[in-house]
Length: 138
Image (tube, rainbow, N blue to C red; front, side, top):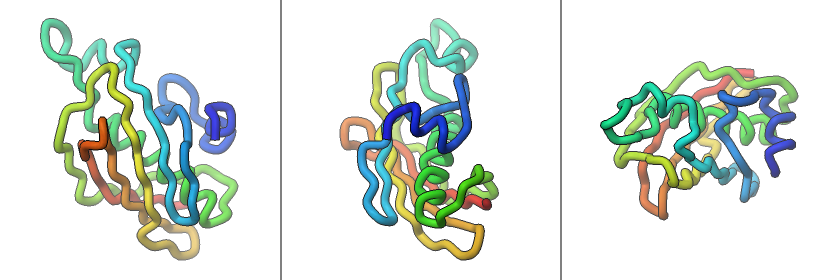
């Protein structure tokens, strides 16, 4: 799934669109990429110079929610936008910095009617950097 298909599916645009490409869709699993660049607007105010440039945890959660929404729409057959209604067990194990490629792996944990729980893990260079359970409502 390329960026144009992603934009149609989740109806977000810059600076809120945080998914660059979907590289795998397999039943209840989806793998997507976020290329982290120094040009991201949140780097201007998050630990401003001379501090380190670190992707805020809230933005990582938003990227996880977007990937969860893409997967849930497909699995549930929903057309609308999924709304974030819960984040459980969020952990940030390593920093995500400019130049990193954040690989987000989402797996449906459970779903019923218009609610869906998705387990999402984030990796940089195959190292776990973040994880959370995202709950969406459609």
